[in-house]
Image (cartoon, rainbow, N blue to C red; front, side):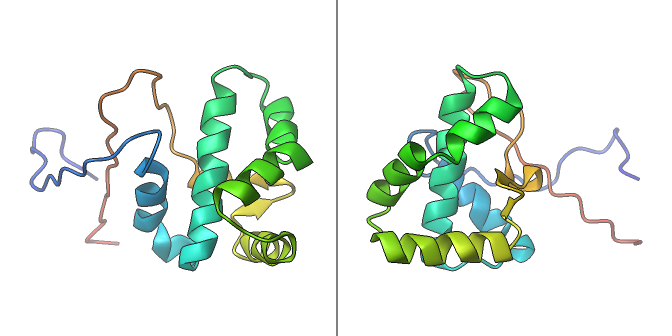
Length: 132
């Protein structure tokens, strides 16, 4: 268990933007849990970014997931990532196989939590249980 009296001993600053690289960096840190290729990462980061943007206006999770996975949103992601239709279908299959998409939704373990609209930073805590 982590002793709250101890200070964080390693801090690395990563310049990023919610309009740009943040979601890709997020997934890079989670790579041991998904093993996605670079192109799959492009699509996954785009899905997370779109969910984040849509989530600002849509608070109903079920509706948010439906809109995220509808053809209009997928078309935007396909265009943003410069995928052909058939290549995008292959990527979608691989995202499902990697459990990034489960039951038509992004697996919650891959979504960053509680990002505020005007946030200037986001912190990810890596907890290494050295006894476990």
